[in-house]
Structure formats: structure tokens, C-alpha cells
Amino acid sequence: MSLAEAGQLTVVPRFEASFKGENPNAEIVGVVVLPEEGGQADRRSVALNASQREAVFPGLKAGSWKVVALVGLDGLTQPIDVTVLKIEDGDKKKIEPVIELLVVSGHLTSRGRGVAASIQFTDPPGPGAISRRVRSAQDGSFRTILPRPGYYGIAARRELADPDVELAPIQIERSVYDVRIELPEGSLSVRVFSDGTPVADAQVTVSMLGDSREQNQILRLARTARTNLAGEVVLDELQNGIWLVRARGKDEKVAEKTIEIAAAHPASVRLDLDGGSTLQGSVSDSAGNPAGAAAVNCIYSGSEGIPRIGSSETDSWGKFAIHFPNPAPERLQCGVATADGAIGIFVTAPVDDAHWTLPSATASVTLTNWSDRGNRDRYWLLAADGGLFDVSWAARKLGMLDGPFTIRKVPAGAWSVVRVDSAGAFSMVASGGAGALPKIAQVRFGAGEHHEIDMKSGDTSPQR
Image (cartoon, rainbow, N blue to C red):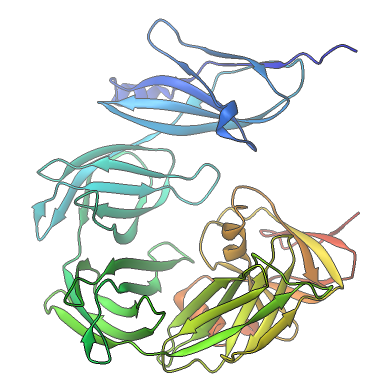
């Protein structure tokens, strides 16, 4: 029996002519290929230079291979996705891709002065989206290479040990050389106490929710820090707006408040940890066995209408616990995702004896064609009884953001897919009003069926 001959790929990349004309120092310094599904062990690379313009990769296994160009400009090197190719046994393919890029330069400033910092640009959602970092000089000047037009998430940190300062996304449609990124000026002092005693090393998280400059997107900013020995932490460079401040001690005591941040007036808040309320219980599979390593995710609305999410994982006995600050939520909409691909939905108040059993009558569904799948809490499955399952959360949790997402065991019945496009829509979901949102798709799952939902067209064709 003869062995199948391995495939071979030759890549001869070049720049788009106008880009090279504007950036004569730009070089394609290498090409990397790696299997679309697989580990880094099969990753292959070839360095390029003025005398070697093509990269040859013999001995490739059959399958889909991702091609990445390494582009250098003035000492900066960035990976740029080129394409994904299917290689069959014995193939000898050659491609000559034209690399089109954006060069972006400008200044990072604070109170009108340049800042030396590490700036992170997060690619627009889509295949190959990654985060790229570049260092600004003492005068705040920076220069970077980006792969395509769109809205880029921005964050900056002055020192490696500092948390990132998340900023509103910026729109970049072409090469531009005068971008100005201004760090916000809001400041917040948080003091954490328990029974009147300052709490050291408490985790403090501040978060803000609003509408993004990008159409149909949510702006979500967050920062996490820990209190010092005096129970205090100061967070600088916060955007103006309403922030949710939450603290958690090592004993799981929690507290939270909302506060308005304005650059003109430093803000302060005191949080007194208490036991709050707890949802605890267990999850069983359809046969009644403990569902170990299952993820539990609950959304609810606070007294001022700001959405909150609590999450946990079950232990080997299927048990879990989620702690909530006072005032206790009255209604939790919870989703469960198990290690074997089953999901369930449950609506409850915080109780200490919840027992959830996943249904035996299930169907499977594959979600395709959702280019903005990486956005948190974007897509939800809505059951006929109003129960909710956060599809975007589950895809991220299970590492399924880079392709079609198959949920192997969805409870049989009528379902809809809804998309959250704004802070207002997210608040509706949290408060139990998801049924009023527009439906991307509506489908009835029969036991044993498999359906495929196209997230752009809304097609819900059953598959055989």
C-alpha cells in the first residue's frame, strides 16, 4: 500500500503598488503557514529578503492551511493574514497574494502632552482578528501597521505592570498619519471595608456600558485592580460617565455601587462588603448524573437598570455557587453549557437549593456566517417561555470563535435568535424583555433533528 504524497505550497507575496510607493521602507520579511485546526507544532515559516522573494512549503498534510505574511516597516513587524487554502494530498499550489495594508501614525496624549506607553490596537471582528501592540515615544508619537479598514479597539498602559486603560474604538478607513489618541482624565478612589475594617487585597472592578461610535455596537469598558493595605485603590484615566464599581473579598463577600465620573472632579466611593445573596445548587445531565465542569452564566438587571452577569463552574458533583451583592436580584436568567455540548436555560431567584436537570429531548444546531461573533453577549437564543442562552458567551467559553459553532444538544422546542445592538437592547435582555427585540431567525427544533442557522440571512434549513 503506497503512502499518499504530501502537498506543497509556494507563496510569492507582494505589496499593492501604491502602498509600496508611499512606504518604500516596507518589506515582507517572511511567510508563515499553520493548520487552521491544529496545534503550533505544525507551524512552518520561511524568511524572505531582497534575493529570496518566494516561500516554499513542502510536506504539508492534507487540510486547510492559514497563510500569514510578516510585514516590516521601520523596525516594526506585524503579522497580516493572507488567506486560508485547502491542500489535498499531492497538491502543488502556488499563490501570489497582493498585500494591502494601512499605515497609521499619530500621538498618544494626556492633558495635552505626549505620553510614552504601550498602545494596543484590536482588529475589527473577523477571521484572523488579533490585538497588536506598539510603543509610543516620550513625545507620544507612534506608528503601526493595520490589516484592513474598520473600527479598532484601543487600550494603553504606561508600564508593563499597569492594567490597560480601555478607550472608545476609533474608525480607521485608510492610511493616516495624524491620529490623536487622548487618555481620559477621570479619577476614582475606592475604599473597601468589612465590619468597619479596611480590606486589603480586595478585587475591585469598575465597568461602564454605553453605545459605541461604531454602528450597532456596544461600548464596554472595564478595569480591575486590588486594594492596598489601607483598603484603598485609586483608578485614574477613566472616561466620563456612569460606572459600576464592584468589590469582592477573599471570603466571597461582595458589594457594589454606581457612581458618575467627571474629569473636573475626582470621585470617591466606599464599599462595605457583606454576604449579599447566593444562588447555589447543582446541574444534572438528562440521565440524572452530575454535570461536572459545566459553565453557568446568569444575567440580571440592577435597581438602576444596568445589566449584570454572574458566572460559575460546577465541580465534579455538579454543584455550583454564584454570589451577588445586595440588593439581591429578584430574577436571574441563567444558561448552562456542559462539557459534552448540551445547554439548558433556567429562570430563578437566588436560592440555596436549585436543582437543574437538562432535558433528554434535544436537537443540534450549527450557527454560521456571524462575522461579529467575537463580541461579548451579542447573540442570544430565546426560548418560547422567555428563557435565554448567551450564544456569544458559550462560543468564547468553548473556544469556538473562529468558525461555525455547533451546539450538540439544544432542548427541543421553539427558539428564536436575537442580537444585541445597543446598550438599551442589552438592558432589555437583562430585565427580561428580550422577546421585544427583532428576531434574526425563528425555528422549531424537533428531537433528533439538526439545523443550520445562517446568522446573516436568517435561513434555518434543517440538515440531513
